[in-house]
Length: 94
Image 1 (cartoon, rainbow, N blue to C red):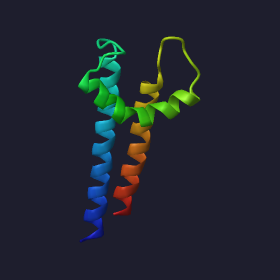
Image 2: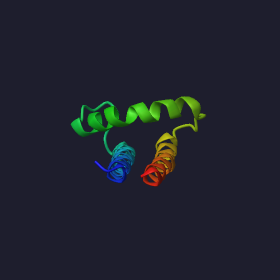
Image 3: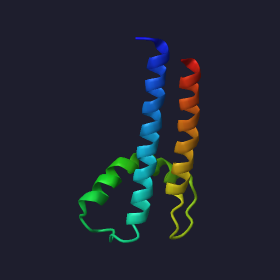
Image 4: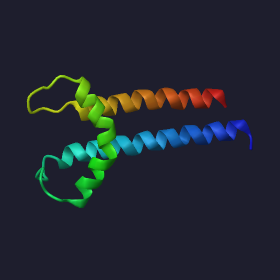
């Protein structure tokens, strides 16, 4: 396989992964307004399992803002920045 094709596929994979994680974090934040915290909703449980490994370290570092949770916003920005850098690097390497 040509190295250009490999790096292009790798960059596309990173792009799709970042897009999927950003969408999951966004949906979790939106659904949290409508779904009660103690409910056993299958969609919320899935979103929580997918996004908690990303949000938990950010919550430990960020100061508390009362009832306002800015961790999803920060996570989405970090994902976009890091994903963009990795994608550009992979495409440049190819």
